[in-house]
Figure (cartoon, rainbow, N blue to C red):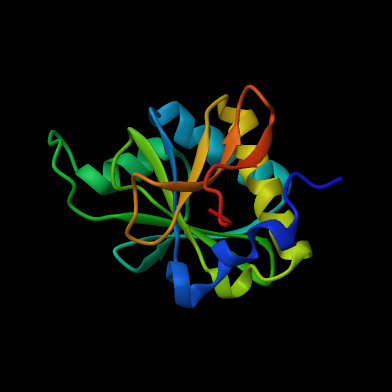
Length: 166
């Protein structure tokens, strides 16, 4: 039985209603959590591409990612490194290192239509949440304080936070 039923959440996946690119975030992270996500991507065999300022690069470690983002001796973000991840060829997730204190990524609702694609998203949320032991929250585009879905660490599953029927 899947964590979520497409019929129960499909209104949340309507790009015309919620924007095409909802925000996904794991809060309260550190460099080690970013490294755990990169290690997870590699362990799962998901395809990925790394770039800094639009320039493709080899991703050796998250320490290098942080150095690219901030440069030497500064805490001010210079450029946003991007890690593009395809858990399946038809679904792209773009991780952006805006800061080390949260892991932020986008998904495209146009790629996440139907139960099969919803299950892919749930599997990714569950894998990240379990690996980090932290909640993974998805908010409608431009609504960071109102999550729709979340990986609930204690329940060990992805749950509906917002009631689309309300």
